[in-house]
Length: 252
Ligand SMILES: [Zn+2]
Image (cartoon, rainbow, N blue to C red; front, side, top):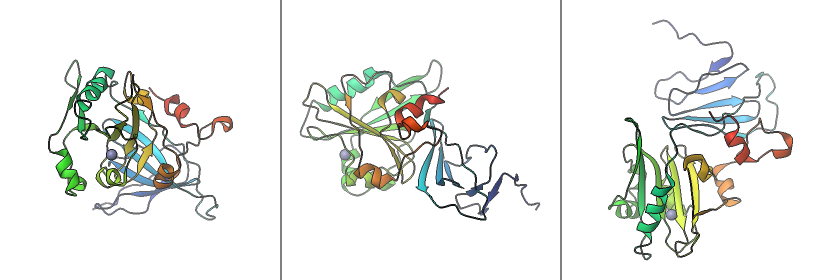
């Protein structure tokens, strides 16, 4: 069998079919990952590239400040988060809020799916067995089909991602939590799950056409420490780390 031809601009370290590829980046354009994700060793560090039918993003997973002399690494231009589907109507989010408020002693989960058949339609459902599955530790194996956004309620608690949520939310989809539902402006937090790593502080307006009456919670500190550092290298120096601006810079 002939060996696959590898462009000079990228060298693949692992070619075994059952391993996720790790590329060494020495410059030039690169195709998006064929798999749900891959890794690139570039000048700035190890980048996890995530590509699904609904979202595309590159994430600097392990920054490397030292020059790895001899590898001839170049800076890799990170792809900001890009949501590929029409925005979710805000009325579905308000439906979820009204539903979750019916019994504030319980937590509920909601699944947002998109049917691409023209004219295209978002739907949201409430899986009745979610809580049991999560409680019994089955969350890790819990892979509902076609779910783009999995959102759950924290009733009167703040919106944040708990250790249990981290244990359960290991898939490749968007995750959200809503909290303080007793308030007129409840809290909303969103993150992108990338199979064991998370991109935090995904702005609601990146995926919803309207997030009212919710206020969005910025999760810093601990959340960033858990997830690694979020950075987009094409940021201008005066807004380095201004993740919201970068998100929309190259959105089509
Ligand atoms: Zn939670």
